[in-house]
Image (cartoon, rainbow, N blue to C red; front, side, top):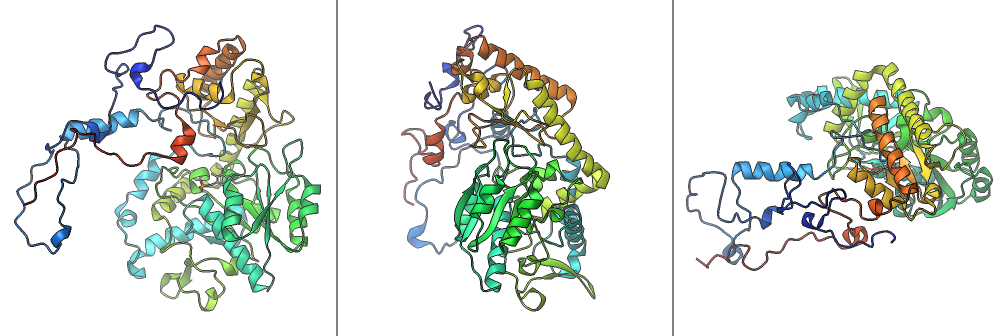
Length: 526
Ligand SMILES: *Cc1c(COP(=O)(O)O)cnc(C)c1O
């Protein structure tokens, strides 16, 4: 069996727990109840609120007036609450257990951040409020900019990008504007084979063609290959440091030198800044632009489609092209440069309608201030120490992809230790779910066969790391002892078993259609 051959999700009633063969009658599992879609509940015509009937009002909709019910499910207040709490129990959460995903860094959202972000003076602002009334918010943006510039050793920062990928777009747009300003539009961007998929995608989106740079046997950029591929048509290189193999690019200064000598700019993917924050300033390495995923280094919540922030720091050469807006100190306090005229005449435009994600700025700044400069330095040290602890403990049973020397913030294993067991990386990851752990990042980076990328971050204690390592060691021993069923059918204990991930990604079912007899009949025309 290989990846994704188990097909559509099975229902909990199909689950036969490994040990007893016991399956509950309801599909519930102990105190975890099975939960249908909110629309599939028999709740039509019921409501949790008691409102007076609306006065009859004239409408201007004519023929457009809705003739069928809107189809909202009817739930009492406790039913609504329970529905969402039960759903939340089907999910893994950073507040539940260690989250070993690699290339994702932060997995802790301090409660203090949330308290700060909810202060009315930040939370209730309107982006178009008059500047004299939002001096506090502008001050916070100014202080955050100061910290980001100081930590990276770069002279300018654009706060408005909404994610790492959006930051890459911002950086490459600045690079394109800089080349165009010199009357030398270039065509190509170089990206190492181990890069995150967003790097080549961003370059292509901006209109560049992408050339891959080879990797050395020890997981770094191949300098000779880089040198051979640099040329007068290369606009930029995009290098992640530490890279997605969890390794510091030890030739980074030479990479920057070669790049600049070819007239190109050095874009650094800063997703892994967590590993070097407070210890290494990318500006000192010759970086021209770098995004900082606030959710990966400065503890703001990750994704889920929610608001994100990926500020981009820029070198002296690119600073004039930074997108509006930014905060400046004026005669009457802080103001925003909004128009691309005068001092901002070279700005390439804007990344978003307003200033960026204020709530994330507040959280990131709260995190910086609660750690202080010395604390942030220790963040990097502890993140690297924890990853090396995992690498050392698991190396007895699993095979590190790059055994030589220490790793940075994440420990990368390949699947050669599974050879002959009949168990794949995917099977192993699914079995971790049964043990109560979210799987690590798998099959990424692509340059390592059957990759398993584990990133604990600085926030895990030794006790939590030991619990995790012991679970993985026990699983690895089971795989080697031939207990293949434990893996092939896994997860046995999750609400959903194996999903057809390709189908889910390519043809997600996003629309719920009522089955006959489930939803109420259409309203009779009035
Ligand atoms: C996460 C990540 C990105 C993309 O960042 P988003 O904030 O998810 O858009 C880019 N590169 C690397 C190496 C990453 O780990």
